[in-house]
Length: 201
Ligand SMILES: [Mg+2]
Image (cartoon, rainbow, N blue to C red):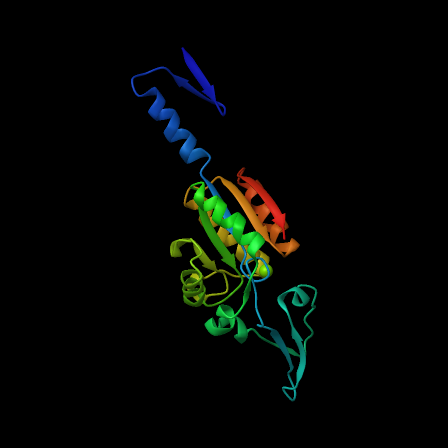
């Protein structure tokens, strides 16, 4: 007797069931991935835009407002607020999305954070403080120089997902408020024939 599962043929042998279990575990290793700002927490952090000539403040954007900003040549961008642990710690948690994260964790799925932030230790400290169950090895602050990612935020987030793919994950559930991130990551993972469901929050 043989069993055909997910396109693979398993001839019956001594350790037949174990082989199937291993195959399913590695083939369909599933992970829930969450963005941070405006997905799990709302903070007072702002992207500040200064004029290159006199350094006057031109704009002060929330992350959502910044999503539709187009950079001009005489604009200097300042993301310093997003490095600050205190600002993050004082943020308001978005409970409906945290509920999904905690439920996925209770069901035994791994959880990752993929954020545009540039200070991974501050993000890890925040998760610990709020008792959000994410292993620090699965926290990707894609603008943190330690990751060596490049390109736009969507491109850098895609590179983080490729690193998750390299860790063996093949089934992704991804929550983010930014449509461009969701679409870019989806396109990247589909090229790898991984399974991905995206949710814009
Ligand atoms: Mg966001």
